Length: 359
Image (cartoon, rainbow, N blue to C red):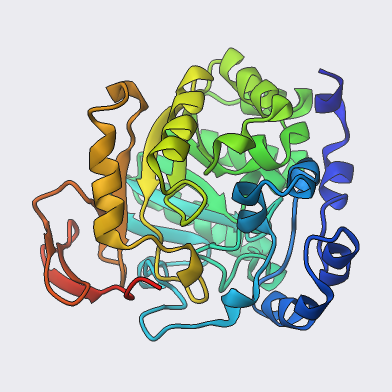
């Protein structure tokens, strides 16, 4: 496909990054500009070029994910700066070591798009948090010195926004660590910047001996356009394992029809639905949140409607760094007044969280 050979850096630069550009495209009204500028102070704007036509056609499931809203300025008492407690499990800069056999390695906080529901919005888009050379070497040494680390998860930010040379250096360093067997990429790139999946990237990925797994973040069937499908099939043809993670989002994928379309089209294109996340309590994201009971009921309804190979695990990150938990687990208990009790998979403690009432 011709479009896949576009220069990915130039494609990235074509995205919308200001309120003025949003106004020019008529994605927002003139009376929204001031509040959108305020929202941008909290979390940058980057609407990917590949979705501008879809937003032009007012496909709301795309627009709501990427075009900022004044609702982002509404902070609730329950919302947290670091909703899943990454900082609690950060032994050195760039590393999150919450579980014994795997670490997150956050190389960059830049993305090819800035999702308005992002749970790391307190760092993502701010280059001041990108790893320095010294911090990067400390992170690699940490992985070398901890023999229980079997898997390294490259995230951030989006690791595929790194230049080819930087990415090559990282993969070569990880390839030298014998106890690391799996390198996992958490990325939005095949959907939001498919031109990045090019010959040079494939060559770099195939140059190492580790098993490479991609967990691709996609939330709507509308994201499976022609270019995205081509990029996904290219990764698949090279033998990489492809999984999908999604976030359950109000008015985007929170009804049976939309969610089933997403899960089926992923499966049809060789991506196994892996995780469906319940939205974290990040600041300014309440307008995306589906009430937890409604969310569980929706998920439960899938089993009798679609093939089991399409169904992901429905999970929630317990606030405060207490770990991921399946919402089908006996460790989840519904209480009164929007309160839920969770038993941490990390230390067995019981945590009660009150979620905001439905708005």
